[in-house]
Image (cartoon, rainbow, N blue to C red; front, top):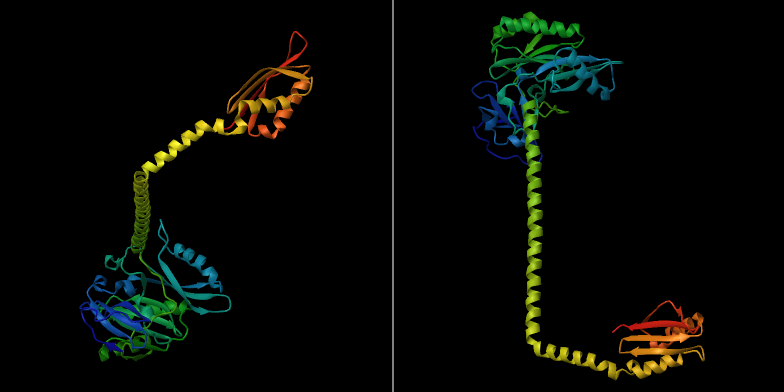
Length: 416
C-alpha cells in the first residue's frame, strides 16, 4: 500500500485504473482519493475536505460512509436471483423504508444460499441525505464498507470521519454494517455491539463468529473490554488498502439521479439544436454555392450571347426568310399539286367538288356525292394518301341537298 497524501491530485488515471473517494478516518482529512487497479499497488493520491475538491470526480466512484446507508439483512424464501428484484422492494415497503411518492434507492448482494432460501444484504439510502453527497459530477455511488477486505466470520471496527463503524461478516460476505456513533470504544459502543450480535444470531444471519478485528488505535483497556464483553479474541492489525468490490452497488442519491437526468436531457437538446443548426448551415451553404455557380453560368451565357449577337441575328433572319419561302420551295405545298392529289382521290362518277381552298397548312374541300358512303370513301383515300401525310382531317356530318345529292365538307390542317 502506498499512501502519499496530497491536497491536490498528483496525476491522472492510467489505463486499467479506477478511482474511489473513501471517507477518511478523521475530520481533518474527511475524504481520500484512492487509485485502484492497473499494475501498481492501491495508492492514496489526494485528501479532500469535500467531494467537490476531487478533480477526478467524473472518473471516480463515491463510496458513501457507513453512517449514510441503512443496512437491512433479509432472508428471502427464494433461490432464483431473478425474483429478488421484485421481492426486496416489497420487504422495504413492509418495513416503512419505501418512500410514499417514489422508489427507495437501494442495492443488494447475496450473502448466503441455503436449500430453499437466500440471505441478501440490502443497502438503502435514507429519505433525508447529506447535502454534501449530492455531487452531480460523480457517476457511480457505492458503500465504503464494500471496498474493504473484511476478515471472515468477524466483527470489524474502524473509524470514518471521527466516528466508529462496524461490519459483520458471515464467512467472507458482508451481512451487516452500522455506524456506532462514538469516536472511541465506550460502554455505549460495547452495548450496541452486544445487541447487534445477539439480534443477528437470533435471525440466523450470523452462525460462527470467531474474532473481533480493530482497524483503529485502541488502548489495552479498550481491547480488554471488548474481549471480556463479547467473549471473542481481539486483534489490532493495520487497516488494509481498499479493493474494488464485485459486483458493484448502485446507490446514486435521488437528487443526483434527477440532476443527471436533466443534464442528459439538456445534452440531447443541445445536440439536437447543434445538428439542426449544422443542417441549416449545410443547406444554406449548398444553396449559396449553387446560386454562385448558376450566376457564373448565367454570366457566361450572357457574355457568349453578346459575343455572338451578330451571328445569332443572321441565323434568325435566315430562319424567317426560310419560313417565308417554304410554301414556294416545298413542292408538296403547291396549291396545284394539292388540287391534283385531291382530284385523283375522287371516285369516278361518285362525287364532284364545289369548293377547293388551299394554302401551305390548310385545306378546305366542299363537294356533292351521290351518297354518304361515297363521301366517306373519298375522305379515307385522302387520309391514306402519302402526299397528305402530316394532315389532320376533320369532316362535318354530310347533309342531303334538294337535288338528292349528299353535300359534304372536309378540312385538313398540317402542322408547320
